[in-house]
Length: 88
Length: 233
Image (cartoon, rainbow over all chains, first blue to last red; front, top):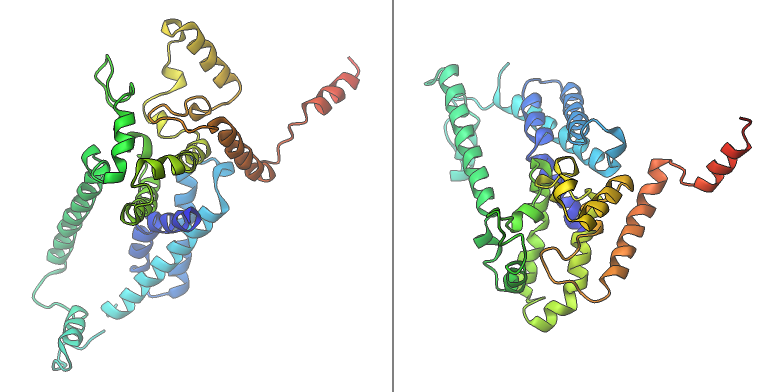
């Protein structure tokens, strides 16, 4: 039970943190899907490293994977918004 | 992008959707940017304010099932003390860092579920679950190096000369042996269940077993000593 909640909590935390918000914003800055996904993934990596206090040994692989995944999804959503809502 | 010259067709939702994605000719970019910025501040302020409301003692103890916790906590030094500093529920159970805080709030949904289901609605049921509940909290605290304790307490800020001899000695041991607050301070705010020491040992051993393959450290002190002893002087 706590395992699922832990997972949901991590996803929620990432959506409302840098990967979700900055990822979405960066995705909205480009029409290139690949670039958007890369930017989102980079935000996920950056956020995980910063929150671990730059101690790579303290990074949990699950947290890292979720941060990158949320970053990619958020930036892809941002890119979709750019396609749908802008002519440039 | 939707064409603004298209005549609105379909139902209300469809028209709202099309309108949402239509370009605005009446507003400048600056107007939209400033409006979006202000809207963002308002939204974020309201969001944070609402989240902080869920950190108050009144909110935490609003549920019937929290009455036992509250009664026990009110007997402790974290509630009433000579300095007048109080640590409320959220100070110990909700992380300060944004990421961890949101995670804790999502996980806290289970408390609402158990309140509705009446999992710990009677003293008997509460005692039945006390060990399991304590165990979950210990696991979180041990895994996070007692992060929430360290929001207020820090070994570096402690003056061992004005601590009781036993406390000073134990705190020095904790530093030397890389221990964390919860290793000794279980039951600091709530009553301890029977067999808590065995359960805490089980929790720490489980966590240690999980972290060992990642660390790659060797703790075979005997082998190291033997190797060093065999070296020529």
